[in-house]
Image 1 (cartoon, rainbow, N blue to C red):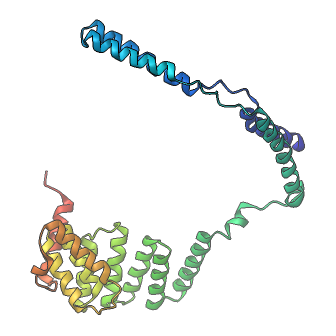
Image 2 (cartoon, one colour; image 1 turned 120 degrees about the vertical axis):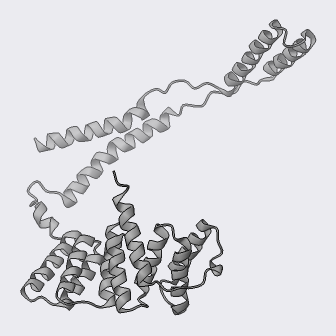
Image 3 (tube, rainbow, N blue to C red; image 1 turned 90 degrees about the vertical axis):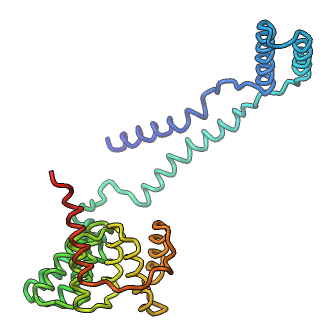
Length: 303
């Protein structure tokens, strides 16, 4: 039965492939037929215009003579040749080689009693499953022996695998255990930004504010605070913060290209020269105002 099924599938495939080659194609018109059709249409249009008085009789006669001259000068062209021999040859080649190739491949790699590959077993070798298992093992180990460093590493691992939700959970767990550096708060804020698909919301801005309270020169916090200012329409304030970060950054700082691109884009949208905006570091009061403005904007107008 299995062999019969394979044979039927092969025949159906051959039929689909060979039918266009073996059928007699519809005759194609020649270039002469096309040109004559155009000239006939021109004559009909000319007669209609002359009947309506849109063209003078002398001009109509001259135009009719010219069109008729072109019709007489049109040389007949041969119809496209139908190379049936080539099509039949190609059909024979396909009809022979396709089944033969299928048989040879089956003899080389197939067998009726070839053991199956269960889905569960194959799934173990999928990269996503391997990464998920690695994360689960790390979580199990940390549950038995929790540590700040371990949860920091787990958060970094989940970020590399684009699992933002688990990265946030791991980072918060590290902070529950006592992690409280500027980098920890900047990490938490950046994870919040990623979870919001690039938007700097109140939660992220609160984390960046905490980072700046511990280290006023934390670069990621300063960048995202500027981005938050730009998002609520404070373009000059955003550029001032970014120019302050640019001034403090080393020449080979990896964030400089992105930072300068943001300065250029925001100042261009605001129609002002960024060099006219003096650098200014973010302040706690300004951050509190930005957080309040974002919270109000997200809550919407009162009903």
